[in-house]
Amino acid sequence: MPSYENVRYEVDGFIATVTVAREKALNALNRHTLNEIAWALGEADGDARVRCVILTGAGEKAFVAGADISEMVEQGATEARGFARAGRAVGDVLENMAKPVIAAVNGFALGGGCELALACDFIYASDKARFGQPEVNLGVIPGFGGTQRLPRRIGAGRAMELVLTGDLIGADEALRIGLVNKVFPAAELMTEARKCADKIASKGPLAISYARRAVRKGAELSLSAGNDLEAELFALLFATSDQKEGMRAFLAKRSANFEGK
Ligand code: DAK
Image (cartoon, rainbow, N blue to C red; front, top):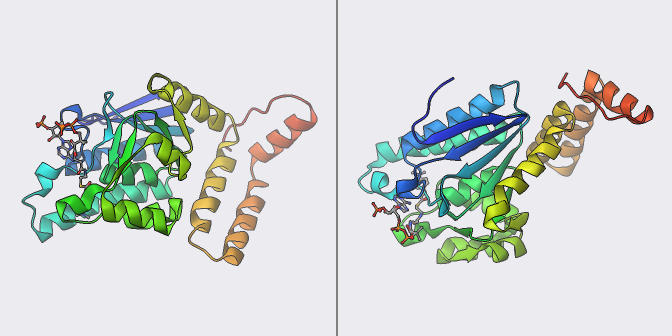
């Protein structure tokens, strides 16, 4: 198992928790940390024990306060390209992995941090969470997919306002505009994220994986092509023993014992 410097990777039961742990800089993303997040998510995806992942930030103050400004400040175009590639790799892993990822946002989720949370499947937030895309304050624009994922999640007008003003919003506003799914008192966030992850992990793992794929890929397709994809994935599940187990268990009035096969 690889050891990480700025990330913690823990597995408990079916659930992996990936924690961005660079508290002295409010978990800001330097290139090394981005690489480590991608590796840890890849590790979770390849770990046969794991059925669902929670991504969070260390400490009480921040999920991730953005890309690391001290690393970026003197970058030239070549370094910026490498930095962008590392960020893109995290988004690509999140997009394409077989297992769902819940973002548990425990504090500041700014710039690259907001974008990281958005790249997860959905967001649970603590009542202390603050979200924003303040890049324009620094003379840049969101670079880890924020201009693309944010309008898809909350609509063009609201996304435009956040991206153009750089304003921060609290958890309640984030809930109101559909950026986050649920808000909990800070002390309960991880327990609630875990409860949801456990619920997902109790379902057929292949069904979860295909459902996730249908929703994610479908968002990039026409309705007709998306429905075709859904039908194919639906049919494919009838070639799995989980489908037989799930339906037989229902008919026998017992709980299903899914094996992901
Ligand atoms: N980077 C580096 N260090 C950071 C940081 C960041 N984003 N955010 C906070 N820190 C550091 C602070 O410098 C401070 O370090 P010390 O002075 O103690 O050494 C420590 O964390 C504690 O922060 P504060 O003292 O500032 O704490 P406060 O409670 O007073 O304020 C804050 C908290 C979150 C409001 C404030 O720290 C803040 O405004 N931070 C910056 C937030 C921000 O602007 N985030 C967006 C960053 S830009 C790209 C792709 C993506 C991106 C760029 C390029 N390419 C494709 C090339 C993304 C850009 C961004 O994310």
